[in-house]
Image 1 (cartoon, rainbow, N blue to C red):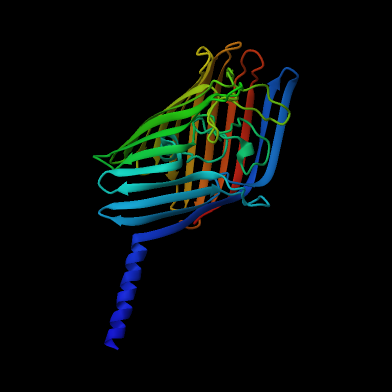
Image 2 (cartoon, rainbow, N blue to C red):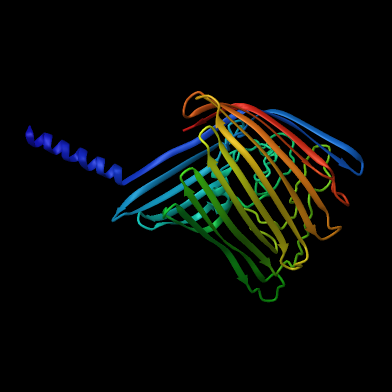
Length: 404
């Protein structure tokens, strides 16, 4: 009997050790509720309007499903991975698999981590911890501008872009990322992305190169209740086979559906395909301070996209924003933000436009994982020369969010 008990204890200890060495976690967010709003603009044909109202998803947080795991390799080393896709709770198919993050890496407890795959850029990670709006999918955020059409891919769109926000690049494929451990309050991040092809085709004019590459660095500094972050990233593409000159402009005239794009150049960097003969430079600086009764936020961002073939053709977007976030009661959390910005371009008619944005929101926490929310956001853009209209949008939502 004693030998049997010892054998059972040994098996249990071995199983516990194996579980501690290797683990996989399933996580996700489900966010569903009512989403509505309106868009308006002025075109050469006169005023235009659009309204939308639906039961949609992902107003406060993008609904997602993910898997992450770690394995203890010994000696302070470990392997890790993340695989994450967006999901659409209100869509009949729930999800057409889309790659939010997929990477694998190694971590040294004394130095830091290295990872390979599709990953967030340093700017996106920095915005996540320095935004009063916490990267929700509503208009009214000058740093993280979102199209209403992106709320579950339903409704009327305004300020749409292929990267979900035209303020900076959220993620790239083909990335290797380095992240240091915390050293005296400093945490550094650096990445490099590359997808380069040089082709020679005999008796054909379809040869040439298609080079997509970029790099970026970021540093966060934390001292007591203060957080300061500085980030820069540069993404470049060049296709000699196409010889296409990218032309940039702010938003073109809106239609009666309200669809438009504030960075509508076809060559701007895309998460999936890179760019088209474009040099895309982005910088972000921000700070937060926790006063106890509330947390204050200050943000600044600049993005300049320049044609690789015509350096005088560019579009620059600059924005600054302040915000606060606080628990009004132990269960009620509120936030507010306000920002301004400007588009400057050099090209046809050299148009320049100014814009403003603000947002208000509140959470009622039923538990640590479930909350009710309500959000209102608004943005306005001035008119400019040529076909550049004065446009604006309001967006409101109320729903429930559960994290697991």
